[in-house]
Length: 245
Image (tube, rainbow, N blue to C red; front, side, top):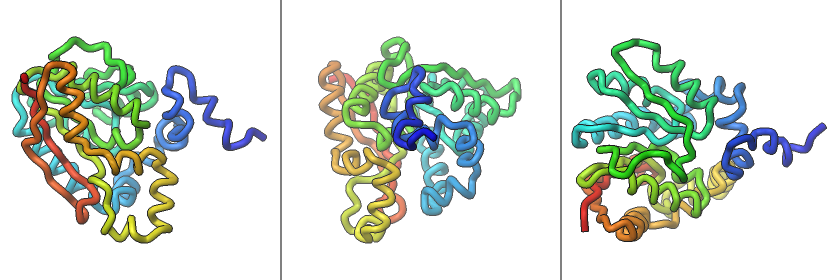
């Protein structure tokens, strides 16, 4: 019998090594995809906050400028179908590195002709998309699952494809939750960081400062224009505007 420490290698085909190694059991294994994509399970994983986070994300997107919208990576739950229904027939662009996730998202779209989903397999760190080609990019619980170097490359690519005065909407964990009971209670902290090996590093980063730094290297600026905190600051929805220097 294969060791559990080597089974992830079976999922390496075309995948970033960190994704196959740490998240094969959640995103690349077909039984897991069928198991996790149920609302009660998703809501339990997010400690009952999924609907609030979804509603706020959609509210922020409604205030974004018109133009092309990219959802950067698939997500479990009803975000993609609900988002498609809110777009008045305009296409939703969807990018993910895992073909099984793209296939699953396509199946969830319902196949209704008036709602268009344009999925493409791409690594978020190396997007085959033109500069300034999107008015809005949505990233829903992705960055905490990436090692720092992958997170930085993804930020660079995201800033590259957003047009001037475009928006970046990020739904994620909040900053380091030192006073939150889930963090202070060591068994829950151990479990969360065991399942999410890159979360502790993400908690300790200043997302706005890093975005500013990466944008300046591309001759752009970034301005935070909205932020909403949930579950005693454990989660957040934040909106940035990409500007010229």
